[in-house]
Amino acid sequence: MATIREGRASALLVVDMQVGVVADAWDAAAVIERIQGLVRRARAEGIPVIWVQHADDGLPQGSPAWQWAPELLPLPGEALIPKNHNSAFEDTPLEATLAGLGVSRLVLTGAATNWCIRATAYGALDRGYDLALVADAHTTSPMTLDNGRTIAPACVIDELNLAMTWLSYPGRRNSAPLAAAVDW
Image (cartoon, rainbow, N blue to C red):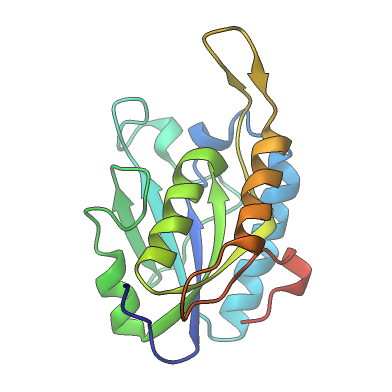
């Protein structure tokens, strides 16, 4: 069983809101606007904002596509977590950063829902964190399968939101609130 995190300290996690990741993402402008609002609220209320930035062969570090979406930029002093795998926890300093801040609850936003958001959400729960996946503050792009069928982004988003309301982990709370209803 996972170690259950003590306390009620929260952090806002902004995952992979990068130019190349959101370029063709569903409802990206509205998602970015909601994340901007959450970042402003978190900063005003003293909630740590942690920025996770992906790099791999398809998203090379330093490339134009790797850069932050211009509407969402970290402030000096906010935690920056570089990653090379889907989960923000794998082979990164995220857990040490959260421990240093005394965080037990993550408010998760970002992209891409079907890859990095899903992996980070399950990684958080597996590691004993409470989790609020912000239902209207994550996005992804359409996926075309080998058989030619396309999975619509809204379906992927809806499925993960539903999973986050029904999953049951001992000693942990998970939810999928709308951005306007996030309670730190």
